[in-house]
Length: 329
Image (cartoon, rainbow, N blue to C red; front, side, top):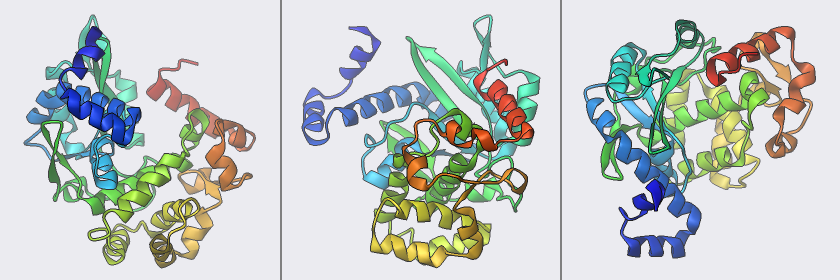
């Protein structure tokens, strides 16, 4: 039967049949994947209890946006932590057999050069992972909700993580962000993905599901993600143009009166100036030569930007490929 088939018997078969009839096979596959992931990270999560952290995106987002852990597919567990706790978290990972690489079959941290680049120029360190019966179990570790190139005022993660809430996900109790802060984190994450030259050059980083998640997270949490609260927090964090940017493009897909009210409230000249640009800082910012519809449906965003990239852009892409993708050349 194999590992994957064996996991199915951990579920109640009648519930699986009901789920299949109601939501189709994708929901079942997402829940099986989630069940497997959380089964094998439960000890790590328990060891992290004394730390300030939040599980972001993945299952918590699926729950808040769609009221169902199985509505979104995911292949790893994203953690947001205070940078000062990175060393403690890494010890926990290594103690539980997770590594950024493996040396003679033993988990180890990444090479020194890669670690320095991640800590000084990025918002994350390299993932920690291990295989269980050929199944990849992986943690993505983020210590900032901004990108490495961000030139504005940073948010202290200990403050941002001060009001986490607890969710029971497949029998594992985890800390996560309340819906309002989950929206802030998601908006900044999507802005980064839509504007990072490295990501645009190496993957499909502008996708329909990004805007779907924003829309339903808002629509299904209007009692807590009120316009006043979202605006007040965005003003405090000095991110109003980025919020407008992501909401604007969400509105290009979802025609909704309430969403439009949010878009209008966040509109500024600074935000509007970002709409037709990409790049995460002033020195690498460029103007799009293709409209949003083309970007959204393109399977090769690199083809849309390659002629506009500078030598420094290509150098940066090469460094990031080496650090995050293991590409030597």
